[in-house]
Image (cartoon, rainbow over all chains, first blue to last red; front, side):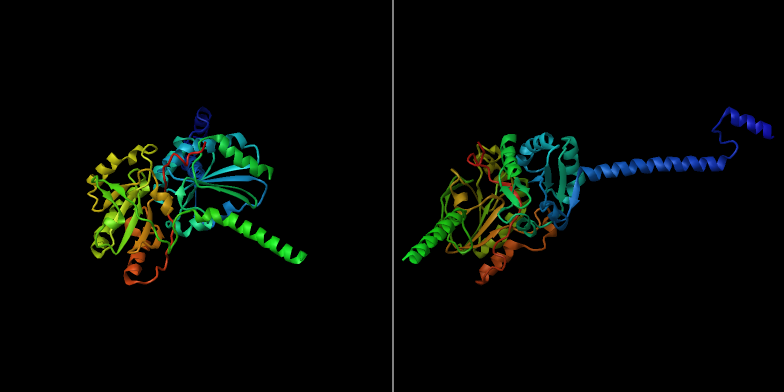
Length: 188
Length: 208
């Protein structure tokens, strides 16, 4: 009996003949682990594509007191001039990513369109800058808290470094006009 | 003598500084309590319309809106309902498209005519030809509401309600609350609100 089994194991080193139950359980757990790993990677990827924040969670993003220049652009997938100027923000991100310059794209799309519109937009256009979604229903409750001089029209962009701040309620038509403001803040 | 001179000088400096800082804000259109100016703009039926030409009005719901802006489109049905509800009480909607059709062809006069026809707009839908009215009012986006009383005094500026995306989940109908107060002759509790909207399309705003 034993020699026969032994032979079989030699023939099939990972055979399930000898301990069928234990080995299949082992396999099952291995598969489960793999599935879970993929799932976790998958969801963290989705989370990375867009961070969803409430106003309270978002406010510290506007108050980072260090020597980095932050460019915080307010946009939405439905806003044509916002989409048109996005390449310049992406170019800014690419050009200055090794310096103390950070581009943050804050989407004002509605939350129910996170999966159907925003994430597909970010993935299709391979957006490299950090993308946030502000998940608040009533703009009247957040516009003034973000920037008192902002009327609510988009696109709109805040540039800041420490306490120094520039606000532009308009669209940009090239990288150079973004760089001008960034460089002013960098020097200051 | 020196003291007086220095006081005079410092006063002059203070005056110069405050006017320099105040002046840009003054040009930004109407505020609550300001008197709006009337206009004469072409309606989608081809006729010229002024506020004075609207008979039996006790006030005006001036809405800067347009064809192309998805956020304005979300409000179309609500603007129709507002007009149907309040026009018989003397508060008609006066819709104005502030965009330059050369910059946004979707907002051309012809497209306005067909949009008004498709949606059976019960209110006037005017084109701000030459873009002179919107800067005068201080509109910056679509939709953007200015509620005027009979004497064209601004009573409310801002949003229609607190839920652009979904009419069924409105909690505070800012504009209707304001109309209600004006109708009762009471001060508007929230006279100014802010909303997200599409920037007004103009050649001037383009950066060089």
